[in-house]
Length: 582
Image 1 (cartoon, one colour):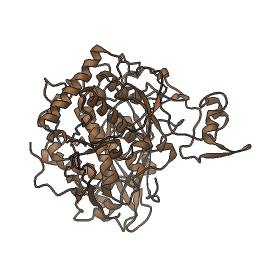
Image 2 (cartoon, one colour):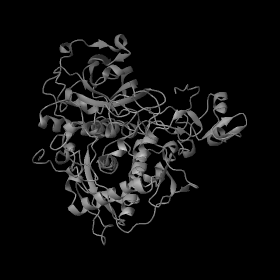
Image 3 (cartoon, helix red, strand yellow):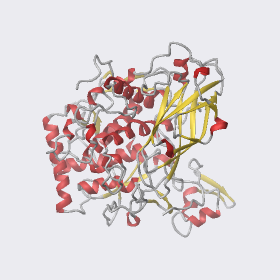
Image 4 (cartoon, one colour):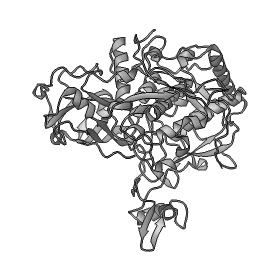
């Protein structure tokens, strides 16, 4: 793997000098850790097809082929043409929005997620700005910043009473996440397929646009165009608790539907290792973040998420950050409420209700920040931008601060600075958390119960599983582990960890060379209760750290952390890292 470097450009918060820049080292090692109805799929389309399609009538644009003469994306045309090609996911049709679904029963939720209808939709143009909005770390936000934030949320909540149909209201904003993420919208032209913005390459651009308009609405409500949404700095030990600004019961930022065990000084457990040692929790968190940002990433899609296009099944596979720290925070914060409509978990612990907790937006502000760090700061051998037209031209609809319904595209949000905001610069201690090399070579013979893949597939994770997997080559190979056809119950919180040649079996400690990566899922409901996805974990650095150059096989240990009985893995193999492309 190419050497890892870190540098960044500092944007001044001085309005007269925000365009100037200086280069500084990003991270110094800290001197201390912390201070305180079921539908059948009758056809398939290709997400990576060529733009022009060869037919008996010559070359035609694939979009025209899909549109056809009788209407948009006619399913009958696709069935008649089994080699139909995909296009980018289109913005949803609000007039056809339906009920979101209860994760426990599959029935329609009492809560209605559908947005207000509008007379027209305009293509959004980024407005000019004079001052760069600098999003602060929540635990470092000034009294003035907190006061503005609280007042903006208070006014947003007031709209729920004074004008419930105002798309800028608190519940209307929360319902955006519900509708896009819990089965209320179908893909345009594919009434048998959910539109889902999680577990694919749509995850980062959708949430960036979501927060962009949310932030602008808050600024509009308090007449402050410089208002910047704080970020929950959970990737730094000083931010690894629920930010105090959200834990004041008299504040509009407070949400009662949070896990009461994770308030105050409770340390975030991103990995659900269940360790009772706070120092170990912090070490696990930092190791996990390093893995999802650097060590386990082979390709652009490994970080960003798998391709997802019009006419393809939702949730093909989330990126490493979405599957990791993003999901960890959702579940850690959300209450395990048995009285709500899901009788399972509420607010942050479920897609349909996550936007009802103000901490959700602060959390996703940091998720967005991690994308900026991965794209702009980390110097690795992995390309950072997806160049597929199917990604760049994916569309979403949002209401802006002026209550205008606007259409946006993924390609227009690559650079957060062009959207008029950036982040306060904070140390990145996880950059120093590549696990130490193992002192002695593991003896695979000491790892009991390991079986060949052929004898155990498909794998159900009701208990820890150890699988002998052939390497693709001897020596210092650049390889990745692929877990394929991961079938899960989407209504359950799912989490499992992966280790290589782990003879020590210290499953509560992730800051070890044998740790390869993780998979996690936030509960949600889709029309097809069973989700299926794939993940790949780069092994190049791990091989160097545990010395397997002369081995033909390795032992892969998969440790279920939550609801393993609802996980089945259909395939497992080690393959060379593919050529560098997006």
